[in-house]
Length: 297
Image (cartoon, rainbow, N blue to C red; front, side):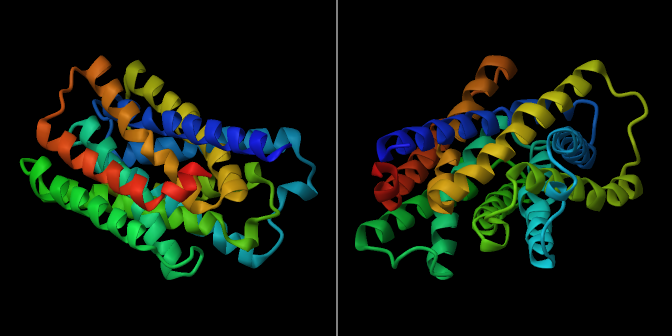
């Protein structure tokens, strides 16, 4: 593929990934009407893990269904936590107390955190003055949303959303590690999600138990969450990190707030305040300044 074709393909995958991830907040909101946050997180992990495990079993040889080394298994375990158990549970918990659109807006902080982490571990060159300004403006937006835009929401929900954004950022760095660079992305995604479900299952049983009679709407929401917002985007996410790097791949979260807010407005009758718009705008301007080189490339 030509460089221009590769760039077009990367851009298309960034947009698709952001749109698919953006649907998660709507599905979580609907599922939470009948299920607890832990139950929603477990259902999301278990459903997506089962779908991808079946896909891998049906399309890969026995040898191709094995992770090649202990280092690869540890890396996948890291993904199970950072792009599975931690953010899924944190977002579901937060959405028991704040609107889905607010949860989506907080996700816009992920590219800034990813860039900061990439610079710290020297996966990115030192920041230029413009990029420093972008990070500063973006984090001012995050601070504004944390302190003012959702000031009426419990601090626990706001902290949970920041934990989710930070966890996603760490996962982008982990996904770019050499230990899984040559491993089939379907296998990595299937293992990470399945292991995440196994890890969280005892906690779900101990804290909330398993749901007795979930409604059809909750089950359909979990199905959408597992397929559209988790299994499919997980594959895109892993391949995108390999092709474009963690900082470029994290730009998908640039799209997430737009999709999340629009779906919350269209299907949940949610509104967004001027304070939230201001905070989100500062974050997005900061991302553009800090990641302008990546966006233009």
